[in-house]
Length: 393
Image (cartoon, rainbow, N blue to C red; front, side):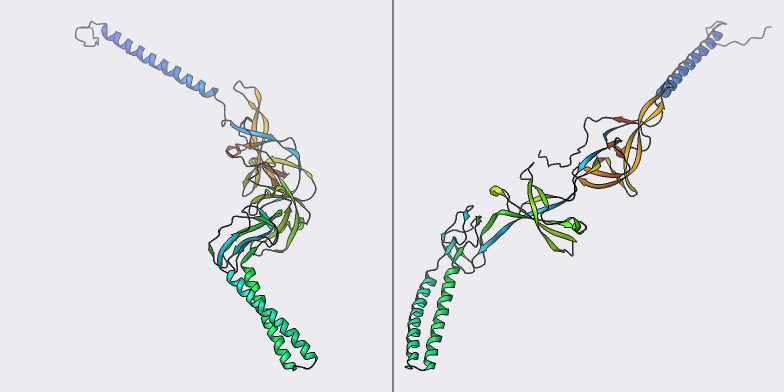
């Protein structure tokens, strides 16, 4: 009897088991082939990707020499050459306003008048008594000359005259205090009272300002003391007049350094034609010092300040192997230490570390390191204006 192993499948013939084995082996082979094809595709994709970190998009500029006017910058405040907030020394009721708010007045012109009827009447009474005392003094002097009266009687008459004279002068001073007059020529401000109002002594009722010329006060650090001199030109910019520059000259340099801030106060004078500038306005002040010179400049956005120094990223061309194995030129970042100098507007002077013609990254440097591949896109470069002006949106 032949010994044969067969699959015991109900209703199946002797060849059915072999066919099932062949089918299973075929399915396994097909699955293995699909897996090998998938692995090969992934490997090809990995090999096609560039090696190393991905490139970073940056903006660049070329380092170049620029004409540089050394200068000092500060924030100043305008002050009138003559200016005062006027008030009465005595109390009283307003009877007349003698000036137009916002108008100009001359020195001595009446601004506000208080009721002085009582004081004026008293003054007339004292003036009459003074006139009588003056006549009596003249008569006594004549009588003394002919020895008709004693020296004591003359002295008493003379003393009475002086008392009457002093009383009349005091009354005239009180009457004068009822009248607020302009101590100098200038422009009147808002008058904060009206006829019939009662004013207490010491209450400010109007401001008077002499508008031209006008002073600008500003402060500079003591380290700049050697650069200051009277007659230097200053330029002032105001947000009230965008795009305009007002020029003046240094008139006074305070001979004392502030002990708290270690700053020096400087005063400049401006003509202020048309009275456009007002006392109390603040301004950006620029003072030119020294002769013009050439400086290698960059936008301030190109500089990265670290505890160990200031750095920039210079764009370099390096040969790298492409996917096809051939060498090609690519842009890479190279970090360089620099020594910075003074700044003006959006620019900074470079004293050491760069040479003219170096291509420097101006934005996007925070994500770079040595050897980072670069893509340059200068469609939106950062500002590089030596004299930027505020932009109103």
